[in-house]
Image (cartoon, rainbow, N blue to C red; front, side, top):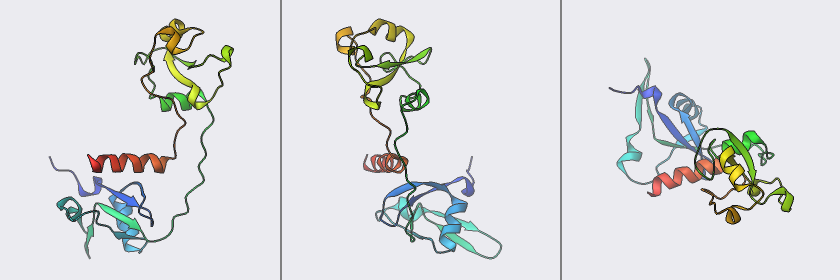
Amino acid sequence: MTTSVLDQSVVVFSKNYLPLSRINIKRAISLLVIGKAEPMLLEDTAEDTAGWQVRSPNAIFYVPNHIRLTVASTERLWKIPAVSRREILRRDHHTCQYCGSTKRLTIDHILPRSKGGKHTWDNVVIACERCNQHKGDRTPHEAGMTLRTKPKAPIHPTIAFAEQFWQAHTD
């Protein structure tokens, strides 16, 4: 089964070579045609020289796997979201950070509020009701429980994409 060329995506880099996002090939073509982007080669590899040919009645366009914006993109201001149930669920992938369950989820304060714990990104995780009750008014260490991931505040979406992009290209 062949996939349509128009279903492909292109990685967009900023003028300063920071990977920003993936866009569909139609958007990539429009950026290239109006001169707001240029083809970019990461390495001299077959993957980078591959790209796609898109044919119209009047022209043939070559669209590379990676393009670089030629105009300075004004990064939208982004601030760390407030600590809320929705954002904690998103960060923890709707999964208990103690046992991995996805049922009956609650918010757990690692250092309980009764012991001076704050309602901050590095002190809250998602826990299922069972694990939260087992932990009770203790720290995970006191309860003999371990966290699957270290809680931290969300990072800028562009930085998250850049980390993911470079991780995939260094493996």
